[in-house]
Each structure stands twice: as structure tokens, then as C-alpha cells.
Image (cartoon, rainbow, N blue to C red):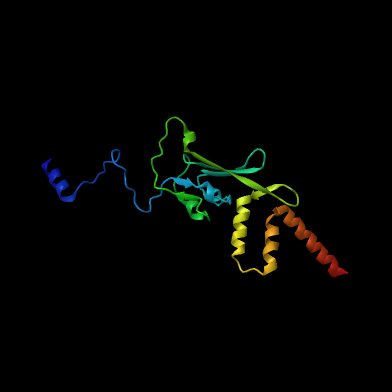
Length: 179
């Protein structure tokens, strides 16, 4: 027993007084992902990258909002959501104390993003914030003066209508080429 006291005195304590003092985690600790609603653009990159399907993005019943939901009970703390988020809307925190009493809904974070409707067909197709984010990125690109407005108008059209417009243009070009 005295030998243990000698070793402890020589090398110091190897344990922490954790419940009584806050535990200091290492610098690159992968704790609970934290969702910042104000930064989220609804790109769904985090949901696609999540291997445990802890992040889910789907439309609500009315089809007017995109619902972002994170279930910390399913999370494996891999950090993929943090890596792929272009705006920093999902960041790993230092939090590791995730115990809840009887109610697992305390582990769920949610956010709702307004959807943009296509200016041609009127169907919702992408979050408004994603269009604004894309336009802000386009405005920093070196586009010709008229091209920026053309690109902005193109953002407000859903993929199906874009395909239909492309087919119309190609058909028109082929018909003009034959005549």
C-alpha cells in the first residue's frame, strides 16, 4: 500500500474529480453536434453524409417547409456533418453529457426552412435560404454583367422545368437547323 502512495506522489494523480469538477476534453474532441438554425441553408449535405441516419431532412405535410431533424440518440459522433456543412450550421461541440430522464425527445433538435416555389410550375423544390446562399456565391464569381441576372432567374426554376426548357430550346435549334 505504501508503494502506491510513493508512486502517486512521484507521478501525480491519474484520475479526475469529474462529477465534482468539469471535465476538460482534448482540443479535437468530437462531442455532440450542435445545430445553428440561423446558419443552415438546407442543402442536405449533412443528411447525405450521416452514416447513422441521425440527420433527416424531409418536407412537412403542407409541402411548404423543409424539416431538418437531428436525433442525438442515433449519432455515432463521426463528425461527417461538421466536415460537409458549407456554412457551419452543424458544428461538433465539446458536449458529451447526453443523459436524459425518461424523455428521448430531449435529444432531438429541429429546424424548419421555408421552401421556394418554381416560378414556372409553382411546385416547391428547394429552401429559400439555399437559393439566397447560391446567389451570394454566384455574385462573387466573375460573370459577365448580364449573366448574373440570367443565373439569378435560373435559380428560381425547378429541375423538371429546367429540363423541359432545355428540350424546347434543343428542339427549336434542331428545327431551325433543318430549315
